[in-house]
Image (cartoon, rainbow over all chains, first blue to last red):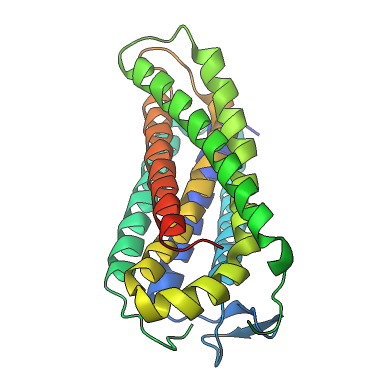
Length: 123
Length: 158
């Protein structure tokens, strides 16, 4: 695969993974939850016991990033074989990937700094 | 103490290993960031060393991340649910910030590994600006996580 196509696809995958991660923080999506006390996994938007959605969120992010990055790589490879220059796409997607990192970081800090926590808070 | 949790019996040694590997990671990202600042100043003579640090960071980051993920269930019950949620809710939120920021850092560490061979380390070289920004971002995120982790462990450790 052409260098620019490879790098552009990597950046696209990272941006997609970060967006999926951010969306799953903001919107209650069905995720894989781990229930530490029961020691098993459960699928759902929420659980009735103390649960961990972090593994499911990271998994969702990796799957979205991998699939979209892979599809992007396939498209970019085809474009480069047809003689298209992807230097601009590489720069733009790199900028997007970096922006999603910092936007996601901002969303994480903002949403958790204001989250009410108390005795018996779930998850 | 209730039912034993997954990996709970070895959570303390794993926490130590998590901390030690995190310190090594912090050293590597800091060295990389210093060399990245050198790139900004037009000093590219150590670009091969910088590429080595990118590889070290990409190797260490997943290890630190996985160790943290393994001890997380014990932390979630024994520290967060049984202590922080009752007495220090800010600490519960700080920990969740740390773990979520860690996932973003993992993405950067792996991105750098995949893209670094295609970066031209010279003034106005292709991809150099983005590479520098990713490197400095990762250093900032890693430092933030280490400080948060130390703060939380000082508050209540496993």
